Image (cartoon, rainbow, N blue to C red; front, top):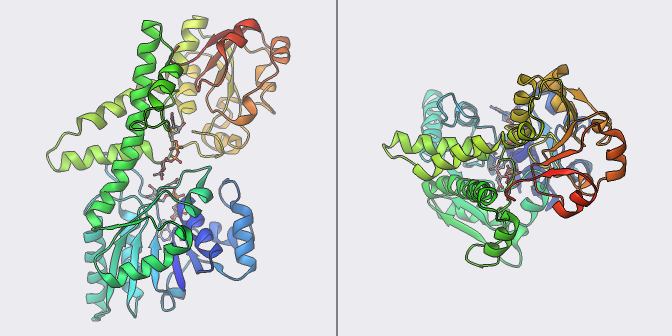
Length: 436
Ligand SMILES: NC(=O)C1=CN([C@@H]2O[C@H](COP(=O)(O)OP(=O)(O)OC[C@H]3O[C@@H](n4cnc5c(N)ncnc54)[C@H](O)[C@@H]3O)[C@@H](O)[C@H]2O)C=CC1
Ligand SMILES: O=C(O)[C@H]1O[C@H](OP(=O)(O)OP(=O)(O)OC[C@H]2O[C@@H](n3ccc(=O)[nH]c3=O)[C@H](O)[C@@H]2O)[C@H](O)[C@@H](O)[C@@H]1O
């Protein structure tokens, strides 16, 4: 079976490599020539554990190909996945320009029955727009070629993308015919051999499922951050509360970690887009609006704690551990670290940061507005405080002795609640975390 995947970003490249791994012939297409040239030369454009090996193995075995031109493979493939970006527009809506570009290229070049499957996160109603674009192109060509559209939102997480794709909790597919259903079943069966958890539905419901899933997860996080802030005021411990409620199977224990707010390329933009869809239909999404408001405030909580602990921040030196929006990725889109850095710089502090993989991305965004350290202890030299923003594993058991020796101050602000307050008190640190 042959397929094409348009858009070779996190989703496109991971999906492409995983489909190739189960024996499907995959062509990954991107308009970014440099990206494609690099991939052809064996350079992976993103940091994602295991992706390097998976891509190179499948390229070597001849099942994974790269091109800038969808036309080249269109006559041979049964399915085209569209996995291009859907960034937020100024009004918060999802910008569909790339998605509709793909639809036009598809319509301009198909010559036989092909299914265009949207993997990008797109608002309800997008598949109708995609269909209209394809039909317009076909009309211009004076041709009537059979085609179908389908929706197959992606639920992978950065940092665990391959595992999420290879063994998904479920696969959601919106389709309009039995023929499309059979093709999609063939594609996904290898990933769900023992338990076929593919949920077929209409396209509008599939599109909505993706926004509902991300918004529900964002809601859990903002809810726990709200509870954490209240815990601090009433003298409770949010970690205990998390354990206490997470053991109720109706609630479950995932995505209940309080911290310095959610970031990334998806929760912030998808929450905004859902609010916008509500507005377009004259409906106020009250819960989701509150989720966003809580998160905006939470993203600067580490700054507020540093200020409370240090008073005037002018001339202070702050060591920052972690820059990425979460561990195991170099992605800094909407990272809470960016908000804290801006506020610290505005207040006249110096920031010295370290992240195991996101430093090049930080340099691209921030240039020399902050200093970059060689390792986590290097950030601490002469620092008045350490701010932990991303819970990378290697930050979990620091040498408190070394920190004492090199730091000027003794303040640790832990934005991810990874340290034990009793241990830090014993070690002579002034420790501030979230929700305790
Ligand atoms: N990043 C993630 O973890 C997840 C993302 N999503 C959704 O998947 C979609 C893609 O996200 P990412 O992979 O993060 O995006 P990305 O920004 O990493 O990659 C998108 C790629 O599409 C390419 N592109 C744009 N227009 C094109 C065109 N006309 N033809 C060919 N290539 C084109 C770009 O050059 C870029 O390489 C978004 O809608 C996102 O919301 C869904 C689940 C997880
Ligand atoms: O649509 C998407 O792109 C993806 O968005 C998220 O995945 P991702 O953004 O990669 O990362 P998550 O692990 O969900 O973390 C998002 C943010 O929430 C924060 N978070 C997560 C969990 C938690 O308990 N508390 C918390 O603050 C993380 O630190 C991070 O900043 C979803 O988890 C994926 O299912 C979805 O496919």
